[in-house]
Amino acid sequence: MSQRFVPVGGQVRVNVAVLTDLPEGERFKDFWWATDGVSVVIKYTDSNAKQRMRTKAVITQFATKGPLVTEMAVFQDRKWRKPRRVALGRGSH
Image 1 (cartoon, rainbow, N blue to C red):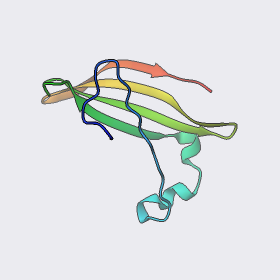
Image 2 (spheres, helix red, strand yellow):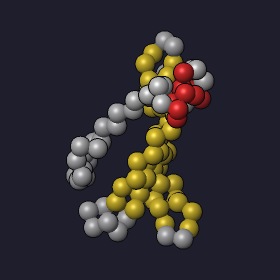
Image 3 (tube, rainbow, N blue to C red):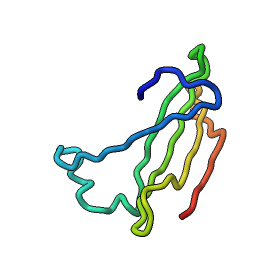
């Protein structure tokens, strides 16, 4: 990430690159992920580091379109308890 602080209402851009030459990227040489999707999780806190949150985005590739976010969920991380989902959005192609 290029900046450490994102103000309220700001946007975060995530660039995803698949390096198929590395052993961990070998599975991406086949296109199974194009229909199953790839999940990206971003963890963050408020400016006082007291409210821990995470956003999970599912990125899918379609043959007729480029990659798109098909699902995005926002969770509140709670100490010693299961994260609580506070928002869920689904996209379509």
